[in-house]
Image (tube, rainbow, N blue to C red; front, side, top):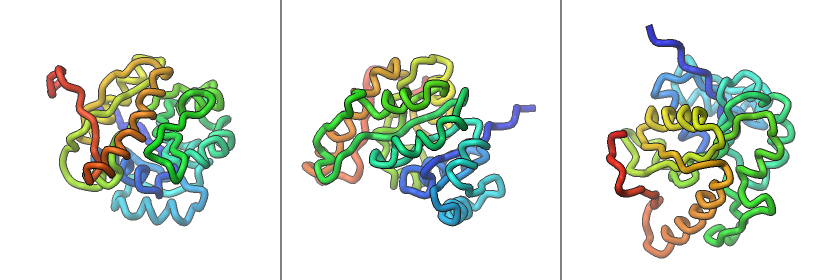
Length: 218
């Protein structure tokens, strides 16, 4: 008998990216907790998943209950939310999806003093097992059926933690690839602004990335 799947908390899960990731993971059979600063919004977003194994909570309650925690919050809210949750995330696998976009010039790379949002998160969550991923997946594509034609680069200092995240990505119908230590996240986050510019220039609906030279079936 297969072991039970871990409960996954999605902080900021009522937003476009968070709700899309929650939907994919829920369809793959993972218990989901949607976290939001407004608990009623979280409850509503969880109800939209149409799963008995999904519920909505405050960010703090979701972070405390989740075995794996995904951070899907805007850069402007990133530091404050992580500081609020730091004590609750000790020892947990935390997947940070944040990109340091600075409106209105979101197609221009603007990295923080720490060099990336993931490295900034590491400073605020020194006891968490931090992995960065999902920087190049268009949120609206997650809400569609079937696989997504996009690779997901996975950054983290722990190889086993990267493997766990790559397994989640496969369950969501995408291919995850080891992209090295968390310090390399600077390249992944910067590429998001490049892709936004490509979307505008070529008028495409959410360009992604594909790494060539690797067999599709890993």
